[in-house]
Image (tube, rainbow, N blue to C red; front, side):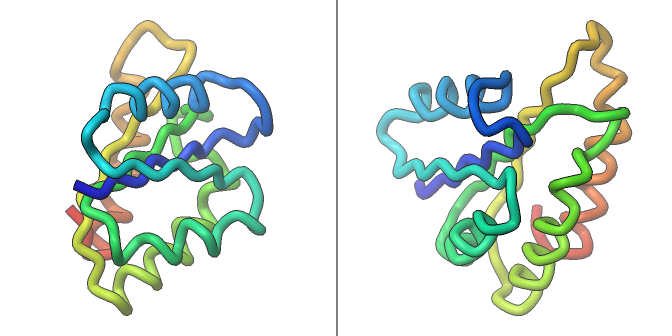
Length: 123
């Protein structure tokens, strides 16, 4: 199985999203795992070029104001176009981290990604 882990933290060093990306890669021994950062637009093309070759994508992202971090939106727009044009077949998973104890803080965030999946034709 080919898995792409996207570290979607805006931080260039450290951060919980980067930590969880590395931990997940370690736990997926035996799979073909690629890890990419998308903290700036210059990194988008590398990730976009992989989307039609991947079985699963995991986005490791911080939760900002109960939703998707704003720097992710331009990437998701480009990824949606790529997926619709190329009929990508990966499954999307989300590791969303926050400083909240309650899981309900992630409900709106998950609904945003679900809406993106419907528009992009992704599970």
